[in-house]
Every structure is written in C-alpha cells, then in structure tokens.
Amino acid sequence: MTLAETTLNNLVKKGLRRTRLRRAVLEVLFESRSPLSVTEMKCALSKQGIRPNKTSLYREMEILLRTSVAEETTISGTRKIYISESGHHHHFVCTACKETLCVSSPELESRLAQVQQILQKKEGLTVLEHDLTFYGLCTSCNS
Image (cartoon, rainbow, N blue to C red; front, side, top):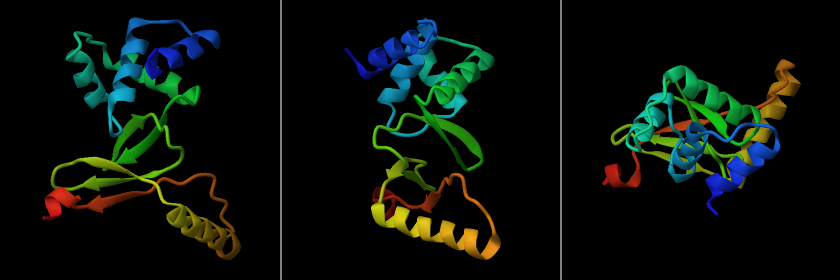
C-alpha cells in the first residue's frame, strides 16, 4: 500500500470521503520533491487526466492542511503546499532554475529559537510559528 493510500484510509476513518481527486492530490504531493502551488498541482493532475476546477483544488488543500496531512509555505509570494515526512524544515529556492530544496538543520533551529527569545524579551512579541525561505543558486547553477 502506498503512503497516499494509507493517508487516504486515515482520512476516511476521520469521516472524510474517499474521492478520486483527493487520492490524486495525495499521490502528487507524496511524489513531489518540492512544495506545489495550486497551479503546479493542477498541471500535475492534468497529466493524469484529472482536470479539477481551482475551487475544488483549494478546498482539497484546505482539508489536507486542517487535518495536518500537509503543511504550507509561501515562496516568492505564492502559497504552496507540501507533505513533510521529515518534520519542521525550511526551504531554499534556486533563483536560476527555480528548484526548491528542503533545508533541515538542528543548528539553524537552535539559532532561530534564540531569535524568538530575543523578540520575546526585547520587543514583547510572542512568536507562534515561523517560516524561512532562502534564495540563491543551487550547486548545479552555482558551477
């Protein structure tokens, strides 16, 4: 059984319907190496012969976010959704080839926690969550 099918079964157990679109969206998300926008998701689905309208696709994305199956991020002003099997992480976007890479670093998280403490102490701000995206050149484009 694939991860998409297992996830779909878990959603059905939570009272959600098993739909062709939901299954296809999960399959695309599990196969994708990077976060996808609605437009990118729609393109990937059309390659499978599935042509949902944007409203249905946004609704599916909201369900996956609400049920904590997927996470979202904003990259270059575009809202994107992804499934994280590695837990909390950040992203690196290559400005040349547009590839999006996952960045997971305990040292980075430690330093971000320090920044959050500074914001709390000096500014009185309470950080509930954070999202960090780096932009630059990947190793392929950097050569």
